[in-house]
Image (cartoon, rainbow, N blue to C red; front, side, top):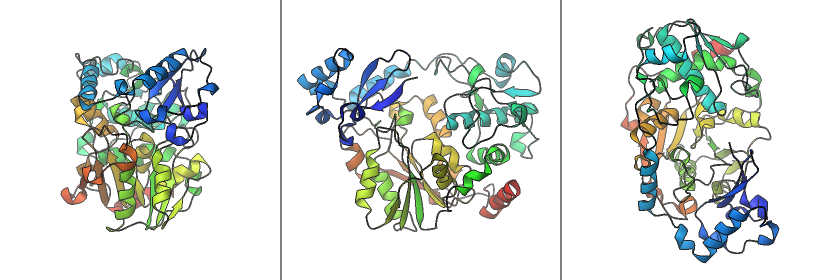
Amino acid sequence: MAGKVSFAALVGLARQTAALSLSLDSNDTALTLEEGGFVSAWRGIPLDSIDASKYPEFIQWLDQGMDDPASNARTEESVLAQAKQDGKGNVGAAHFATLQSYMDKCQASDPEIVEIPTWMGRMGNRVWQVLNAVRIAEATGRKYVKLPKAGGGLDNHFFRNPKDQLIEITPSKSPSKSAGTCDFVPVSGKMYAWHHDCRFLFFNRCRTTVLERQAAYQKYVLPLLNSEVRDKCEPGADDEVTVHLRNGDVALHNDLNPEMRPEHRQPPCAYFHKVIETGYKGGPFKRVQLVYSTEEPASPCIEDILAKHKDKVVLKPATSLAGDVCHILEAKNLATTMSSFATVLKMLNHGLQRLFIVNMLSEKIMTKEQYDIQMNYYEFKVDQLCQVYPEVTSYQVPELYLNENFFLKFPEQNFVVDTCKNHPKTSTGTTGEAKNNIFRRLFR
């Protein structure tokens, strides 16, 4: 898998030129260019710092762009055409049409165990694998979920591995989780063909709700969390919002970026401003705790937040990753982004009062199957979230926005906003006191 380094880091430019980036292939050290879509950033680049003999494809691309920047322009028509073409690769009969066919092929070695043979990606993906395995074990009456021996567990910094890599599955009291019941989700045969679920147990799964997943988090994931992580910060105040921003490989992925995958489409800065200015009882938060990595390129929204909220106390991230994790776990108010990091950690937060999410998925550029998978993976279904959290506000950008001012000048009236007021809670929701009782039992 290719790692990312910013173009700015290579040529000594400031962050605003990070619309151009280089992808370093770890296998053969070849460098290829990614276009961020800001053609104005092509001007004034100090090319004398780049060895043209090492990066001929980059120099050729840059020269072509200089001669005719318009040739690289993205239009809604071209974006939709690309999405349609990409969608053709996500068709075909499912490898496993039923849970039983999946079990017969992928989980036949031990009748008491559901095994995850190989970890996929980082912490967020791995937790999702565990949740899928737990639910399948519950549905089939198996006694254990077995984690991979290699790969470092869920995350060596924050989670311990269970004894013998086994998580014991105890019978669920929920009628919807009785043995033998599973709303199995088959996946198109060509869908992410390199992710064969006999290896990863990622896409094929039993469908679950946010409330059901929260129960699995509390029962099976929380006990693996290193208790000292929560000691790395002070609990967030009621008038303080913790804001997670994504830096690194996909930080600049918007509709102008041809490398963008729909599930990595990052939000405009207006989302963060809206949360900060209106998220606290209809007014502004007094304190803002930022959480972001040191990876490059950096989100332009970091500097934009610092510039536009000088009247508030804006705190930079902790000096350690564990400290940042603690800030999310201990936040009373949390704004997440398109990242599984915050998606997972919010489910381990037992005192969260106000949750803000930004749904950047668009059915215009995704197949129905892709959209359904990502809606569940990122937990964007507001009606389900409102059964778990006291207050939820969702900001959505379903329409394409092919403008180089996307991040810094996106018109806030273009957001589609949804809240719990539109989704009355039912008796199936977990009350705050009930949740606190559960956590007290887990951590006493």
